[in-house]
Length: 543
Image (tube, rainbow, N blue to C red; front, side, top):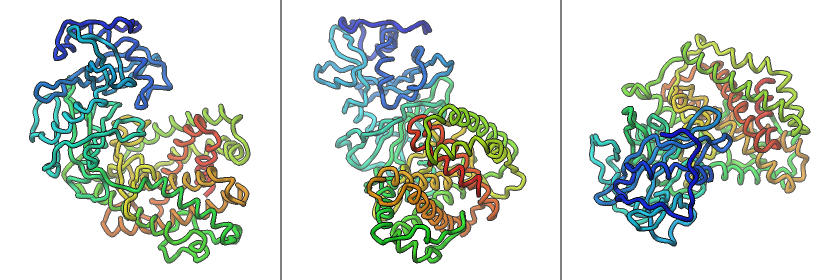
């Protein structure tokens, strides 16, 4: 494959290839034209393209395979996008040839002519016929498929036929198709040479552990690449009819809570506090707090704590499949953790120094504290003595926050097990303390409280400082109640997450890690919100 700058293509005169569509990928001329800057221009505009902050150098075709049913043929391409910064990413792009002038105007990649029939190469997901083929190939999948493109299905995916399909809508890194208004097929766009954690976790929880609070696994499409590695291309799950996600729900609830400060004439400075990380039962929450915030939000947090615990109990009760069996802390894990965190911490320190001029008020104050206490924070990351930890590590969700949770009938459904977007695929499968997921959710509660204040500041009579103070009190009761419920459930199921001191150590460690991670994003995209992770960091280092 040529590694020179891409060919420039004249779009006014479509290229004519005198080969059948079924042989087009064997035509070097076609490949050369297809991989030209036309493809580059198309890809960089896609929502799922993750290389926007880097400079694209050239695109190569890593491999291709057919997605077909009888005479209908489409191609799945794995594109290797190379960057000037000397790294590359792989993307999945299925393609189709259409000759209808009025079709897929926004998703045309290349005008060409095949055996004198003019048309366009388009992203095949835009074509209903392609979506139907993928659905039917999964539905009719046979066990022990040995072909290169493997369709697999669960025993519960049966007795149905294709009726309709549509795009799910506003997605970032993947493309999801809703079938028959009952099933969701997610095409993974960024591809890794390994099984996707979303496929592994989804299948394990719903098939092997019968965990009811996640969309049931129905099937997948995998390919074996040239090195014989299994790569997940698509994942099919049941669609959970829902009333939206837990993030939107929390923002609505919290808005009512903050309006209550005025309606109920609540004196913020008289509100009772609780100890950070103290385990609470709903009966332990003072009447003044219930009167202010209402009971509903607390009962919801209890249910969410239960479902989170049940997910971890399912993940922690496996003794056959080694990729899911619980394991102890050890030196290898500690080295992996410290290397990762020290690199990330240094990166965030630089970001704070370079962006101080964008900050003001409390954010600036906290950013200066962050810089002054950098050695102390670094020490906290280094001070991870695995020999003192008695708990176990499990496969965890890895990117657990309110946006990954759906609400239906006062219950919660957990989805999207792909893991942290910045991490490598191998890192996403490392077994972690389950409290890392809990910390992710706690940071999400913290965010929801501050986001509510920021989004509605003109609707509240109190000063921003007073609202922050009220928000911090509420946050402590949220996490106390969550912990009380979660720890009880986990212990009743004999899952070992360590003794009380160990749990608090792991929670603080994970909260600090998460807040430092968030800081980079906020400084780059919305400096006004940098106060949220900075406050999270300050809470930990001063506690």
